[in-house]
Image (tube, rainbow, N blue to C red; front, side, top):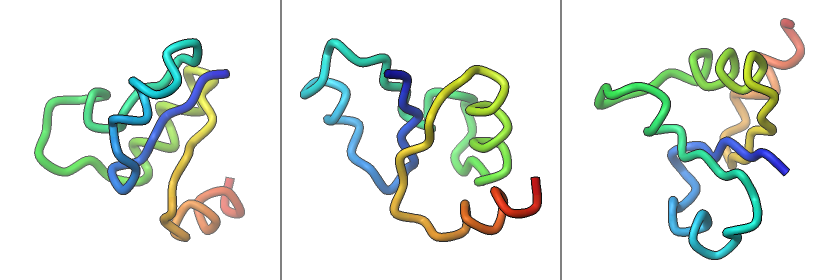
Amino acid sequence: MRLLIDENISWRLKRSLPQWDILPANEIISTSKITNTTIWQYAKTNNYTILTFDEDFCGIAQSQ
């Protein structure tokens, strides 16, 4: 499974599930603040499932 974990999910999850392809959102680009749209587009382009607590992604999903 390929998971892109949002900033509100601990990167430590990556160590807990080493058999999964887990990418923390802050590793996508080197900026201090990454937008939800950037996370969405990266996940869509690279076949990741987004894991988040952020409800804003529901709005992005409905507009796509």
